[in-house]
Image (cartoon, rainbow, N blue to C red; front, side, top):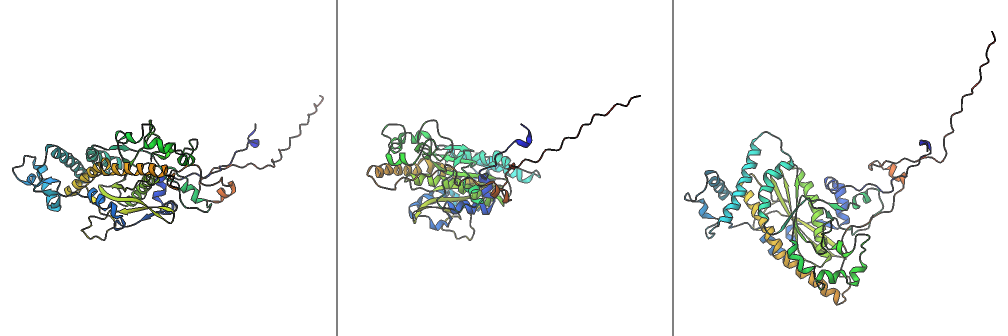
Length: 433
């Protein structure tokens, strides 16, 4: 068939922007967060039931024995100076009553090693990438701090279904049709600790999966059945069962301005996690850490019901409650010995909390959900995951008029151009000689 007779179908749906593109563009993030009913609030808005949990999560006092400051303590001169500097800026890290242990000394030596690498990077004139900071500093001490939980890297997380209706504007479907976000790190409850909730025939997972209310709420063919709804991950686990995430971390390039972009992108991950918990009747906060250029920030997110909608609250961590601060975020600068030690103990706290109190919230919430459904309580279970397309196919003409959307469209007119007239071929008469 000739090129003039070929017809190309126009693109019926605009390309969805990625999660990182949404986070980098304030307008896109405002569109996404408003339709997800997300609110940035203060840590003072935290429900009283979570106050003790958050205080314990960020509590890093009295973790190192004061005896390590004595000259008699057997360590290298560099380590002694590292500990002394930390005690001068954060004396609350140390305790007279703490006897210490060989394991604690080994842990702090790992932190000291990461600090030395960061100091060397700072003193050099080389340019360092995000991957350099992750490999040489961040992962040196944060992976060693996670001992009991499951530490996942680059795990795709399903985004939640928007709760608000919207006008069929061209930019809205592009933003809301995004289905996944990929945080740099995620902390999960180990599968071995949730197995009792899922594997037996009478387990909460099986009872919920087979309940008529839950069955009607989803469809396996559309990837909205309970098996898909029971995990925040985009990829299903090999064995059917629950998966629960307690914390997400976002790494960014060594540019301080990107911390705000990282916070917005990390909020997309934590929003998915708290919506997942809320759908199962679980009341628990989720934490987020943001890492860029050797600076760490934190935030705490949770769900609340308001006027029939699930509102996702996100509170930047601005420091201990007993310290007044006008800053939106408290910042830990990892080139300070006291700050890198505090971040290490914070990660340890997240690890302990994930397999401790957070796991208790999970078991309690799931069992309560089973009880509510078995007693016939209505509007108890709510699916949460993004499925399908949120807008009907858009007309090609509308797509072409919108200059912000990159669409390749070729439309062939029904009226074919008239073919060129053939040249007349006259036979030349031979001349007779």
